[in-house]
Image (cartoon, rainbow, N blue to C red):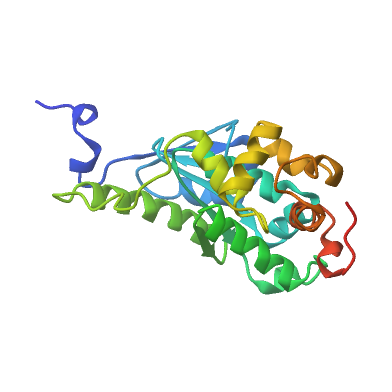
Length: 239
């Protein structure tokens, strides 16, 4: 008699889904929504990255519309995006809510669109949309089931594209998302500062010491990573 635990997950009709939810999401209605689904086991603990980890392979960062705007305002958004982009797991950001939730945020539409472009096109992080907590829960569970479905195909149709290999390649790709930064400048920035976080924290004078970074490019970089969202609408940018 075969034990369920020894059966490959992809071969089970409805295998259980094991989810780790970050303890900072403890009060989130998403957790209660997940628990209402049959065959879903939820453990609340501290995650080093993301908000929900499904079966050790799918990582989701959940943000309400207002939290997305606030994290852009205080600088958390791109810091989290950099860490997500560097993760070897399959990951996505779930943006929950609707446009009305942003009315009190004070964030310009252009700033939000710029953030979405950076996260999706340049950091390579998929952005999924949901209206509420229940839809967020269903979206994550559906993604996990679809992963199993695709993985069970012969031949499997997952991973047709080439993933970046190595942390350094990922770091260079992230830096090239900055305005005016090509492959050579990204390489020089990484050599000078050692990691992406240090580049983003560097002031204009420090950036000017990097080969290939002049005053115009330094201003553009500081404009892109500056935490003051109001600067997005200003013409003069100090370094």
